[in-house]
Structure formats: C-alpha cells, structure tokens
Length: 262
Image 1 (cartoon, rainbow, N blue to C red):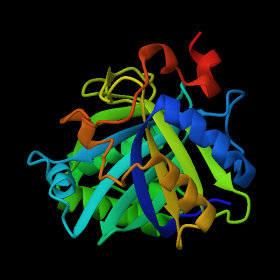
Image 2: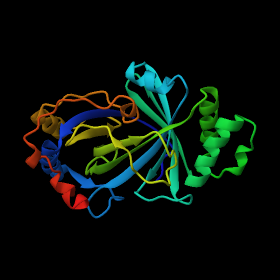
Image 3: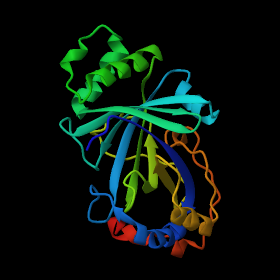
C-alpha cells in the first residue's frame, strides 16, 4: 500500500562489503527480501535532487541543522521512460525524526511540473498534473518556489532491501555502488555517474517507527560500527570518506549480488 505521509527514525552505518555479507547471514533468520527486488535480491534507485544557488539544502545537512529539508524526484530500475512511475518527495528531518510527504505520478509529468515551478513559479495550472495527492503536490510547489529550488544533480545506487518478519515498519537496507552526476538531469538518461563512495564500502540504513529490537541491536554490536550522519545528495559535493574494516581486495566482493556484475 502506497503511503504518502509518514515519519520514522533512520540510522546509517558505513561498512565493508565483507562485513555486509556476514551481517546479511546474521539477519536472515529475522528478515525477508522486499517484494520488489530483482532476481539478485536488489533494485536500482535514481533521484534528482533540488537545491538553490546558495546550496541551502546541502548546508542544512552538513551543518546538522535542527530542521532540514530536501526535495527529490525518485525512480526505480535501470531504465525509465516518461511513462514510468516516479515519486516526488519532500524529506524533512526534525531533531532526528525523518518526515516524508510524497506523491506518485508519471515521470514525464513530474519533470514537467518541476520545470514549471522553476520557470513560472505560481503562474501555471497545477490542476493539470495528475498525482496521488493534489494537496501534497501544492506543498511541493510551495517549497520549490519559496526556496528557489531547481534540479542540481542525479544520485544513483544499488539497494539490497530487507523487511523484518515481525515488524513490517522495520526496514534494513544496504546501498552500494553510489554514483552521482551534475549533467543530464533527466531520469530517462540512465544511472551513470562518478562513484562517490570508497571502494568496497556500502551504507547500511535502519528505518524504524519505534525502538530497534534486541536481536538487531545484538547483531549491530557484533560489528562495532557507529551510527554516522551521511547524505547521498551531499556526497556529490563532498565524496564520502570513512574508515571501515577491510580484509583485502580479493575478499571485498559482495557475494550476495556478485553475479550482477559478471
């Protein structure tokens, strides 16, 4: 069921591919694969992020402001057309709580909507755009226009998503092969980009509406990683630099999805 308005807490942990494989084995008794994954257990995500000339959204994030906000347009899969489903989102963070408001619409319509917000501000008929929630679409226009936002980069990556068996609100995802580009700001142009994450490093994200269960805390403790602030959008301007426990390059392959890259 599509949710257009929800809040949750998110925790992020950069980790090595080697530890990711080991952690997935530990998680398997407690989780199942997301229903939308491909034959390798993953899917591709690409997003256009919006910001203004002052890079307000970027600085809100790196300064760890009490309240910060991003607008992005997201699609799933490696190949998308104007007819593909897309998700236009306002993602806010208030003292650690993540709040999302989003609409689903055709990718071509969503890109045209953004263009009109940038070029015409409020001087266009918003009613012509079909979306799952017209009220949230109006809010999106308000944020884009009031902050003078425009598309600035595309971020793409592969995601291995897991859902807890006993709590559907708890999602565990591993994101890797993070790449960004500042040209061809069109989600029908593929997922190419410059890699902005260290070799053989993935980002573990925990998304929950309540406290983490004991079994998950115990697994996290085994690997001794610390929660870190990390923004995929910001990595376009400041490539990620983290130290994670690596064994060697030969053991750095992600076994669970290795076939994808053969």
